[in-house]
Length: 408
Image (cartoon, helix red, strand yellow):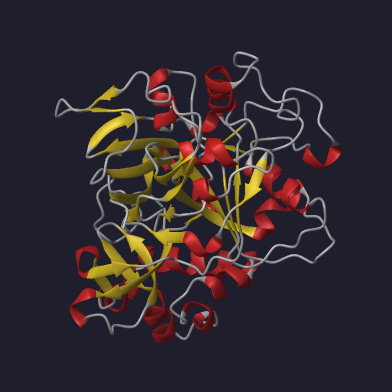
C-alpha cells in the first residue's frame, strides 16, 4: 500500500504503511505505572491497536488488549490476516482518520518492551559461510563442515529466561576459561565477548506433542520475524562445549528487537535459498522461495562493521521448524528460534567479531581509531535490517541494541 495511505509517511521511513509490525509499549509520560499495550509501528509513531479496535467494535479486540502479543500469536493465521486487513483499511480510508489520529503516539514518547512472553528458545547454526570460517579457525579440516552439517540444521536449546528486550544492558559474563600458558583453566570474566547478528522466527500457534510440523505448515505456525543478538562468550564456550555443546557461554543474554514483522509484510522478500543442494530426507524438502532477502547492518559504537546478507543462509526457517519438531517436540506460543550467525562470503559480511577479527588475531579498526578483537566494556552493538518492499521500496525491520557493562 505504498503511496495509498492518507497518512503522511515518507517513502523512506523505517516503518512505512505497508510494514505494520507488532510490538508492546507503554507511554513514558505516565511513568513506570503506565499500562503495557499492543502497538503497531507506523512511520515515527505507534498506533494503540486495542484502543482503535475497541472504538470500532472489532471482533479481534480481546486478543490485542492484554499488553502482550501472546494472545494474538495464539489466535492463528485467520485472525492475523483479518487484523492486517483492518489495519490496512484504517490507513487507506480517510473516514478512519479521526480515530486513528487520536490514538497515534510519537515513538519518542513510548517505552518499548519485550513484545511477547518467550516459551522456548532454539538457536541454529545455518550459515555455511560462518560454519566454514569457524572450521578454518579451529577445525582440523581447514574449513570443512561437520559430517552432519548438510544433512540437518544444527542447533541447540537456549534459555528463554535470558531473552531480554532491545536496550537492556548486557553484563559481561563470568565462567571458566580454557587452559592458558600455565596449562590450567581459569575462572573469571570472559575476555572474548562477542555479538552474533541473527534473524529470529516467532511461533504463534502451538502444536501437539508427538506430531511433527511439516515444512509446508511453516506459515500456519510462525507469525513473523524479529532481529536477534545472541551474545557469546567465546572463551567460555570453547572450553565447555565438548561434548554437549554451548552452555554458560551462550546463556547469559539474548537481545530481541521490539517489533515483530509479519510474514505477510515480507511478500517481496522471499527468494529461493542457496541450499540444500545435496539430497535431504523428505521432511526437510521444500520447494520454492522459502529464503528471505534481508540485509542486516551491524554497528559497533555507531560505526558500521558488517552487512550480512540473510539470503545466503543454507537452511531456511521452514526447515528449521520441521527439524525442531520431527522427533516429536511440541511448539508453544511464544517459542523463538533463531537462524544462528548470519554471514556472507565477503569479509565485510561476517556477522560476528569471531570472524571479523579472526578470533582476535586481526582486530578491526573503528572510526575513532581504536581497534577491537572482541568487545570492550561500554561498547554498544546495534543490529538493524531492511527488506524489499512494494514498488522497489525498502522497508525496515527495526533494530536491536545492547551495551556491555563490566562484570559485577
